[in-house]
Image (tube, rainbow, N blue to C red):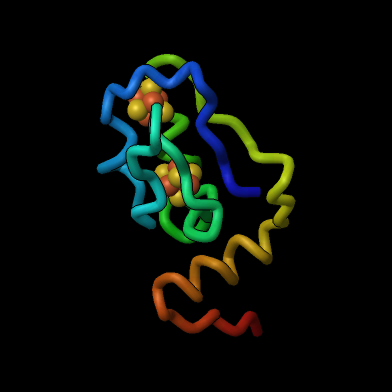
Length: 88
Ligand code: SF4
Ligand code: SF4
């Protein structure tokens, strides 16, 4: 799943530079995540970096974007232009 930011966001700016996919940007009232660009940090980090750093815990899974690990990894490869590594 992609993640989403709730209206509890205090616009502290710390998550935006942490995102390896540049999926976070300022929205109309608070920061937002582009679900097409969020991989839950799969491919880059072991856990979502925005969730780790957010001081008010206002980033949650977006139930509208149900994606398994394989789909998130495929998104990672698409975003980075890298080829999946064949498992032998
Ligand atoms: Fe970016 Fe990772 Fe947060 Fe998704 S989970 S918005 S990829 S930092
Ligand atoms: Fe909002 Fe949390 Fe990001 Fe700060 S770290 S801008 S509170 S989502």
